[in-house]
Image 1 (spheres, rainbow, N blue to C red):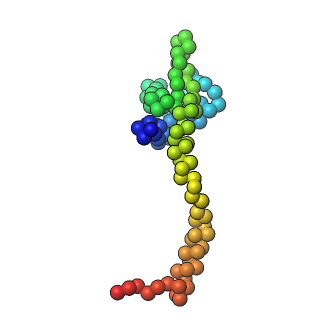
Image 2 (cartoon, helix red, strand yellow):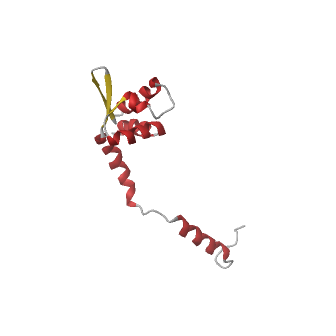
Image 3 (cartoon, rainbow, N blue to C red):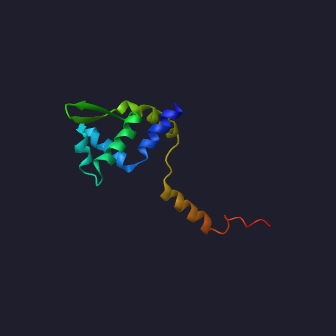
Length: 116
């Protein structure tokens, strides 16, 4: 499972690949349509799609002369389950924490003198 998670997270690490996945949430798309909004070559987009396909996040199918891409949401399931394991911790409100530290550090009685 670790190896497959590594491949999925590596694929998700790139912002272009995340954008492609977001586009494919709407519907299947031809490779040329996937490439349209990006300022890169069709070959560059094809490499990104190959990484996504290798991770199992996208499937590609030839229909006539056109290659269509489809999102495979089940591939994210293992990664989602793994990340939910960290959801047991409550999110820290950093503003409250900063106010707490400012209050604690500004009161000389609560700040311990440095040990020598």
